[in-house]
Length: 390
Image 1 (cartoon, rainbow, N blue to C red):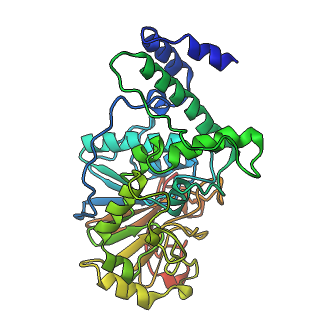
Image 2 (image 1 turned 45 degrees about the horizontal axis):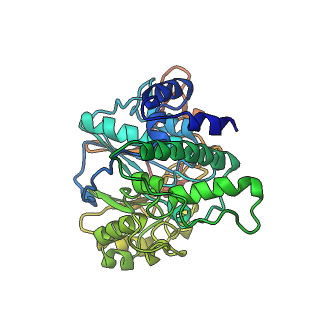
């Protein structure tokens, strides 16, 4: 009842003061954008699948709804300061996907990443985000791994988004906004009534052409090549390369924007999909299909390695198949295994190393140390450098 009274007293005239008060009382940094509809659509930019090799490249694994662990990973790589602002200079950062599910701060992470993207560009850097299997699942309406806290977050989003739409409809000259709940049933079989509105909000936000999916996920890449490194959430097979990496990115974006129906493209579904494949990410290197990986990389000009998330590596970031397979999902989210944050760094001059917060490598007399032969990796994974951050 209190919410209804608040919204009924809003007018175009008192909207600015209301929003000011709202911003002051809400804890999230991006609240004015988090709940209110955009005044206009941001023009779509052509997707870029191939990037030249930067001086410094950082790869960050699955985040799964854990905002604090996400920030820890960025801090570990020296990418954000104490105020969570970009300080990574010209660094190129790739986040490998799976922001959604298993944690309750999904929207906060999406806005955090968008903020960093804008700040990075101003400093000559860039943050590139990928779609993981959990983004694809949620866009299709598969909410098997959603948490109660995440449902509450989307419920709050829907409330304020609705208020924003009502305000726009009161203002003369503005286009009447589209109802994001159009066509969504009021209840669902086997879903408790107390969760029905939250489920409807999540469907409305994340389905193809939904406000959240269009704004935050449509411009994600599904496959990326930076210099001699190929990034993909699950893995690539020769058939995916033959189909076309640029074509995959373009079609996934078109699907998320609502122009290709409700179901994801075939190469995003099933065990051999680009976001689901585990042939190169088994935690035991001996189980990885190294001959197949070598063949796939040979079909991508200049590619030396494939960097993947999706499969949790309890031993930390590691390499297999003579470092042609680099696996960076350390399960850092508290909704996974609450793993210690680690990130992969590729320096043009010094090569690959892992930045870790694992205290087993902490030298009592030093703030950080670097050593050869990464102890987090079993011997067959080959030598690496590791730097430990306090």
